[in-house]
Length: 333
Image 1: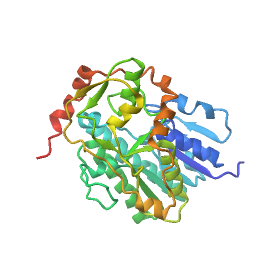
Image 2 (image 1 turned 45 degrees about the horizontal axis):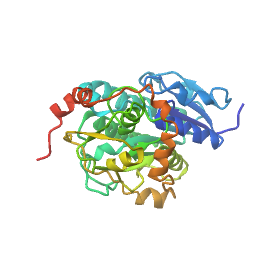
Image 3 (image 1 turned 45 degrees about the vertical axis):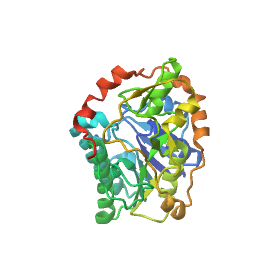
Image 4 (image 1 turned 180 degrees about the vertical axis):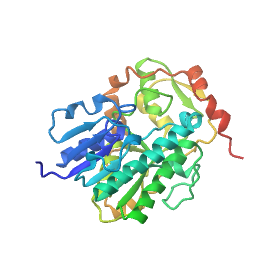
């Protein structure tokens, strides 16, 4: 019988979740991962297979029962599991609501039943919509597509369980997380996966608009540290933004990677800038970002071969993949 504290990571084979697993194991936790492997990759966690403090439960969060034995004696729950991406959420909103809202409710109930000490929810900065910047946690909420809505409603459920049932919980609204293991397959999505495959293929980068748009890129290991800080604090019922607080342009990313570009039409509903006001988390949790953007990109380039099997996108395939986006996302008047 291990005397190590037990932490559960849902979505622990995914991008951010797998880095959370790394951190927890390094900190001396016994880690139980819940992941149905629909979005995660075995290679993200393969190096832990022989670790006695690591277990993987291949289960969909929508099937978790309140009395699930996975949660027995668990101290913390870090809830990353869910489905992402904008366009698929517009096309299949029911699936997003079922997984990201009802799936979260199931994890909350299992955590409550097991007497978990702290629940930390992976929320999304997309809940702010086209926000004023820098964006504080008390900014007006204006989800612009079903993914954003589902993540925000999941967060509301977390705080309802906090208020009604006394389940201690905090929520972290993640801005633009990047880093090694960022998803390499699937639908058209994050800029890194798109650009890295294009770089490997000696193809031009598909640059949306003029590239001056900026994103608050935060390196994934810094994100994981923020989640642990949100678990270990005595504070509960709090929302924290997590970003670097230092937006970088897409042109800067192109500059770091090197190569030619081809321009695509600017997309409606996309902000010109995302910028997290991180005053609250830096002051209350003594957390701060440590990985500079140039360093983070270099870490990813060092493992660029991991993107060799990623889909190769070009202007024609992107136009087809984002047709729904242009159909339903209306330009701001």
